[in-house]
Length: 276
Ligand code: ADP
Ligand code: MG
Image 1 (cartoon, protein in one colour):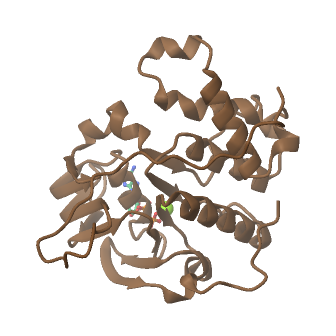
Image 2 (cartoon, rainbow, N blue to C red):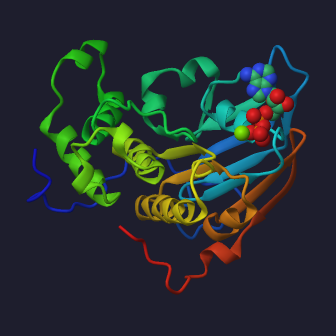
C-alpha cells in the first residue's frame, strides 16, 4: 500500500436538511439543527441517577464541551444521543427527525454519528490502516460486506485521513505498538473516515499527558472545523474546554446548570499550530 500520489481532496459533506424557524430573519438559511432535546429525562434501571435536561439545541458545526464533576451525567448524555441509554420522558431529535434508541440502532443514523472513546477501543493486533478502514464498514449495507473487499474509494478515504492525522509513517504498524496519542489519532481517523455529521467523544484525551492532550484536541478541533462537523465531547479538564470548545455546557447531578458560548475558543491563538 502506498500513501503517496493521492491528491488531497476536499471533504464532501452529506447534505443536512436546513431548518428555518418561523421567528428567524429571512436573510438566508439558518444553521441546521443537529441535536434537539425536548425536556428529556433518562436514567438506568439499577441506579437512582436521573439525567433531567431542559430544551437544548445544538447546530451544525458547533463544538460543545460537556463539563462537570464525575457522576454528573456527561457520559450518560452522550449515550442518550448515541442511543445507548433509553429516554424515559421527552424527545430527542437528530438531524431534524425524532429518534428513539431503536431507530438509533438503524444503519442510516449510525453512519452519521462517529464516536471517539477515552480508551480508544481499537484492535491492537491490527494495523493502523485496518483499524481506520473498518470505520468505512458503516457505509456497507449488508453484513456479508465484512467478508468482501473494500472499495477503492474506501481505501482512498482511509489514506486521506491517515495523512490528515499525521500517521503516514505508522500506517502499517500494529496499533498496540503505538503511543497513546498516536492511538487516539487512529480513533479520530476511524471516526472521520465514516464521514459523520456528528462526532461524540467521551473524555477523548483524559488518558493522555497534558501536552499530547492539547495536540489531540487541536487535531479534533481542526478536523471538525474543516468539515463543519458538530462535536459533542465530555471533558473533565475545564481549561481544555475553554481552549477548544465553542460552547460549554455544565452538568451537575444530572441537571444542566450552565450553557455558555465560549468566545475564548473563537479567538485565534498565536503559536497554536498543529504538530504532525
Ligand atoms: P460522568 O460521565 O459525568 O462522570 P456518568 O454519566 O458516567 O457521569 O454517570 C452518571 C451517574 O449514572 C453516576 O451516578 C453513575 O454511577 C450512573 N451510571 C452510569 N452508568 C451506569 C450504568 N450502566 N448502570 C447504572 N448506573 C450507571
Ligand atoms: Mg464520563
